[in-house]
Image (cartoon, rainbow, N blue to C red; front, side, top):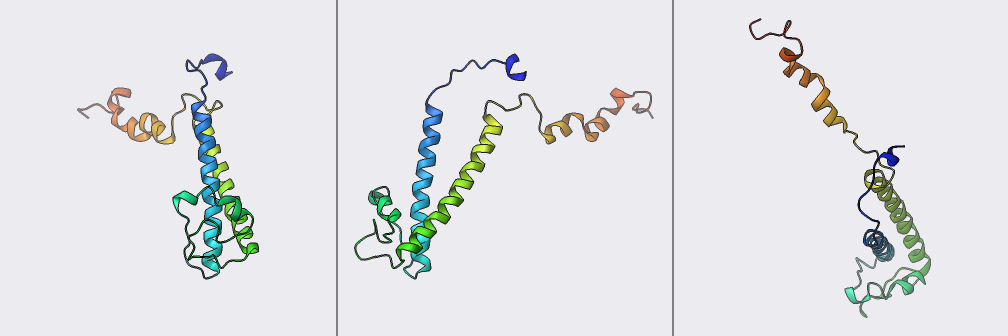
Length: 149
């Protein structure tokens, strides 16, 4: 009913959904890299990070279980393929949970089902709370809280 009374003068455009999809894909790719890094770190290979050039091109190799995909030649990842796959899966599940939570918060705040015109708890206290009533007591009840009393 509330949506029927309000109109949105702005048309739906493609920029925001495309930006959201690109952000999710980037976070998922970074999750794959983080999973491989955790697997190599726990296997004793140290902190292994790919260069910017191989950030996206190494993802298929990592998903195939290659712990050294996209790393420089001198740093081969010592983690086994099972460890790489397990840690990538664990990190990706955490990334998906975090992404879902962020999407939920954003939709509640800016989505089409948001509640228009609702004050926050702090705003309601500021305008309607006891502290405000005490400040304006002489106006509300001049017979009880007059300046001369």
